[in-house]
Length: 427
Ligand SMILES: *Cc1c(COP(=O)(O)O)cnc(C)c1O
Image (cartoon, rainbow, N blue to C red):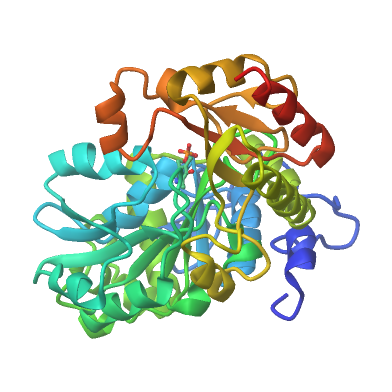
């Protein structure tokens, strides 16, 4: 499969039917799997043989779909999770516990911020949030002896900040810790973090990967490149016997390429059970089959919409990383030369009132909090998700009262533009 191009991997990777078997990934909805003898089953529990016994731990449908995403990212192993939030949580919790520290780009999804700052904070994991545009020196200075990972988003939701992946990877590796990148917005079609030094990638598959607003899900992918044994003192849960699994040492038993995901499966997923259902994995796979075609259209549509907005007298500013004059244009050319994503943020004249008027008159773009869907969706945070904040508080949180986010869909772009144009006339 390695030699095939990304468009082909979208359709074909992860599942190879044998003679007479279904062409598409079958939905193995079962909770459990039958064995001829206790001895046979015992071999699975001893990890002498690989196989399925209970779908809370592993399921063939989910594994097929995870393998497709793994191939797209160019990783060594992957696991599906119940949501993007779970993927992020597992990616950190697999190697961090109480008393550990993680460095995080401050430009991340709000849900991820809450997960880290509030929920994982209560578990005793400490986080330092750092401006991703910081200097190498500032980044370097944020490391502590108990730092176990660095985390950032390749293209951040909703600020659309592009991460300098190499800068972050270099700093992480200098201090002997892995870089974890949330790659949900550009997807592996547009950006492959492993090629720039990231060690682990997470996805909210609820976004472009599913792409049809049909199923919540997540995925964690390991590059297999991080040498846990070399930094064994930092990662004892991977490099010393696991008493909850017959004393298995994950790096010894599964090697550098398999240790991280095997441990996540055998221990974290076993204990927390945040699995993706086989039915949802099947739906996700349908989305993945057309991902390459959709992403191309999302990006070309968004570029046209952004260019239209740039010249409109009712629009005061446009933030789209694909635009030539964008602050991150240089990083875009380096890390995602084929395109970024379909998400644009912009401000309308007339502030909060102007934005509310504009939103009232849209017919093609739908008002939703979701992002990255075939259908164009649009959100005015100041009057919806952020409505409890006053204007000063909004500005402080990086969401100005006039800010609107549109996730440009794959409809005919002229319909999207004409709809925006007529709604702007009401301001
Ligand atoms: C939506 C999102 C998440 C959370 O994913 P869910 O599937 O909603 O749990 C994480 N990261 C980014 C960048 C997102 O956009």
